[in-house]
Image 1 (tube, rainbow, N blue to C red):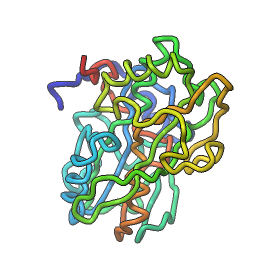
Image 2: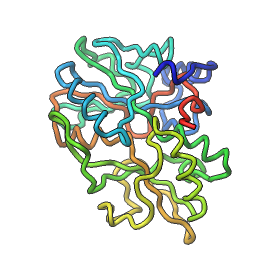
Image 3: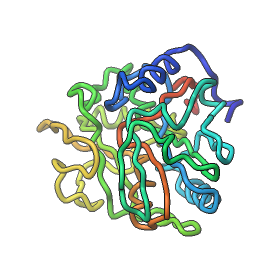
Image 4: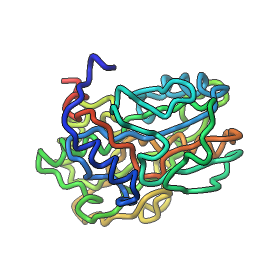
Length: 266
């Protein structure tokens, strides 16, 4: 991966320092424009190999950007000063599949057998959409992106199985076509949409009640457009019930030093 993506600028480090001190605790969409953001999954060593296999079998929702060394809170390829225990605005701590805590720092639960996975995030391709003149509704509304559990099963691997989670952005048909073209260039951050319109066909019964994030208005001339989402592992964790796990809180991402432009496949 290091040969495909470059490190540039200090915007990511600046935002991480702000988050680390507690000066920022909200959703990270729109922060450090141009910098790659990542979802986070942290598991004990005993489950890490199965999760890597799961991610490789489900590259749309779980495109792996980096994997840490066991017990290390660092991701050197994502940021020289990065500390995975402190540099996200909000975490989720899971025990036996139950969400037990949402802290702003996970040093108190850190273990030497933990392996961290940074997974590509759709916030990265939003920059390209905005540059093309496409409004990203949750950014315009200053809210979190709406996310939904679907009836689409992921490919199982080892102990891991569960439903695909999607994020949604409302677009006119013309802009939806353009969004497909643009996001197809970014397979490392979920790539092209997985579904357009007709949310009931993928098990979403009420578009105004997302399972994660915030609802956003959908105008009369727009359709909901759905991308595979890096919150998918959290729906899987709720089903598989590992004895211990840490994830990001939906919308509260790891801001890296990588540049979004370096992830384009074209």
